Length: 125
Image (cartoon, rainbow, N blue to C red; front, side):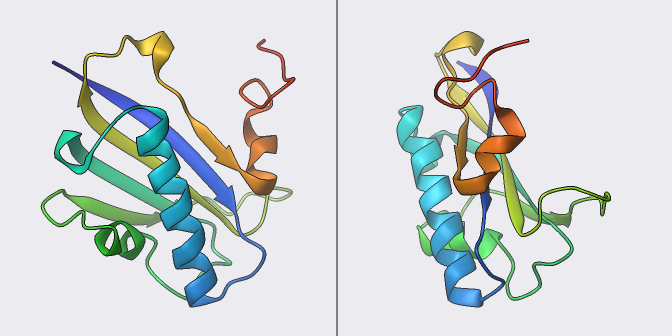
């Protein structure tokens, strides 16, 4: 079994606790489902949020999904001029037999602009 990294991001409409938790739960579950993973496959998960998101720790969404024995960490994204506002990113490390090219990364809402090469109709450069 190999450890692989999978990424995801979501742009939220507003900084409101329940909205943030709902969005992050949706993103995290879609990341797991897209890669055929369960909680037992997870090694660790890092959540980042842009500086304009202060209503809740994004990692709480994973805890609410039952991820209780996996190390989770939250951090703040760099505050870069012109970057997308209200974005939560996830970097999850998981044990899987999938080769690297078969790992699916998930970008929801406006966060799809972060990786146009992975969005439907996008191009890889």
